[in-house]
Picture 1 (cartoon, one colour):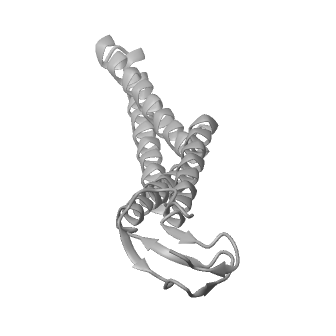
Picture 2 (spheres, helix red, strand yellow):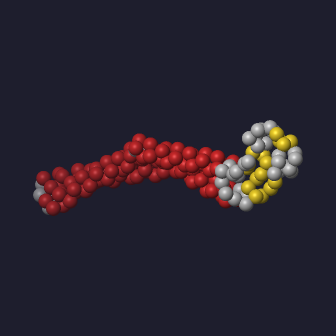
Picture 3 (cartoon, helix red, strand yellow):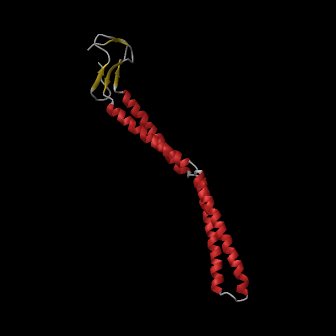
Length: 172
């Protein structure tokens, strides 16, 4: 007596009563539509998680890196410009030809330009170091779990085929 491991509608009888069967030969096939949909869903989830992991691990594209490099160059130009303006005002300030406020504003512009340059440089460094190892480990664990679910769904799909446990003649 054979009983299926899963419930379902009989889709096809693959062997007729009285026919000889070999061990592991398919005898009855149950409807696999729901099991196939489950497998497709699990596979898509796993593939999506793999793509997300690849994206997480990927370094910036050359265009993204170039944008940060240009921001650094702009900050360098702004810093040089602010330094030159402050340097031009300094002799005038010592001769009291410009106000203390003007000199303070020029020095603050230099400080601000330095900070903008350092910020742009730090942004590029952060972009290039890649993801945190913990984030990669978490994503890899999710992919592994999803892979296990795919394998489980494949095995479940196989349960929709009833196979002969021994060589013999089908009776019943």
